[in-house]
Image 1 (cartoon, rainbow, N blue to C red):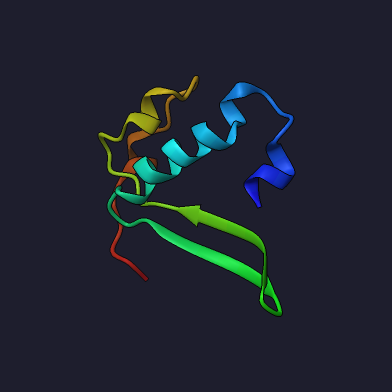
Image 2: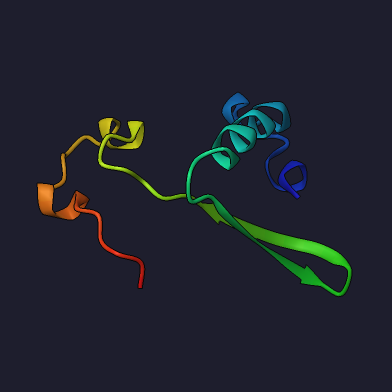
Length: 76
């Protein structure tokens, strides 16, 4: 699916790079994936993982979030 959508995009979106990123993300705590199918054919996916207060993702934000926004909450 990724190759069909992003094959001619920037190098950051190459199939090889995506595979590396997916493998790294899938090893993160709280990683989940959902795959949508049309009959037997996969047609889309979404994935996410939990962020801890010290996760590298926060350092890439240009405007820091207030401390309260990064507070861990129990799962609902």
